[in-house]
Length: 239
Length: 124
Image: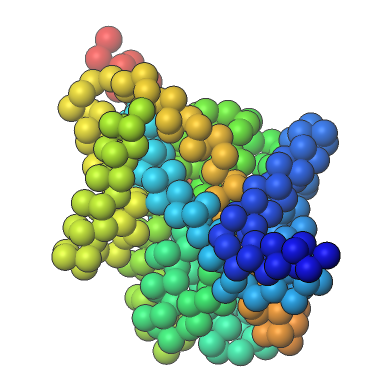
């Protein structure tokens, strides 16, 4: 018995345990997602996070020691973002044709994301620091955290709100788009990419390549737009 | 395969360097994406191993967000005290953004197509 305990102590200190846990949770979540015929409500990121957080809380494991293992998965986000150039190149003809429509939609969509989030949170009495941390919620985490920090928000809270926004858009976005009767894949992808960055893009890529390419492009453009627009909007209206 | 993974990492590394040296409001990987896109434009085609590698990474893109998502456990308390304002703002704003962006994209695409057709009509 003593051997087993020693092995456990050794394993919980090594990255292997939490790396494997992350992958097992995702394999289970993906199986559920496929069983439910890719229903957006069965979002695999959400299911994996719920499974892992429950297990970590139950075993009294800290996020830091979990991340020791999970960082190897987390690292691949960078290379995956770089490789979004490939679907973009495959769809370049379509993108060129609607360049103006893309730029206008991203700019106005980006402003909608910032203004509506800040106004609603303020009206419902959220704390100032939480409001700033929420403002860049629709863009990819590294930029959102930088912008939030510059304006006096909490970068780690922003990271969480960004992920929740991504999950929300990926889960409920398709529902909104169906209600509005939007069938064009480029418009569907762009909207999901503007509002819910990489998690939305991941969902779009699974459904349709055009949607995936437009989502990836919109995600990149919105990161740029929000990084420039948010400090200006903040100074104009709220500071 | 290794060559192209190296190429992707080089694009990301140069992207990070450019962003920090030029103080750009972009994440390094997005700058890297632009560099890789430039490479593809110059090359004029997607090398097969690179396409395969990118498809593998992007087919599992959701997985890569899980470690950051688990970070939600760090903020249970704050999220608890501000649950209503933050969650309402987050959900309503996200859905509104999706609706506005999609509708604008459909309208402007239609508008520019009409313009192209009008131009063609004027030429004939």
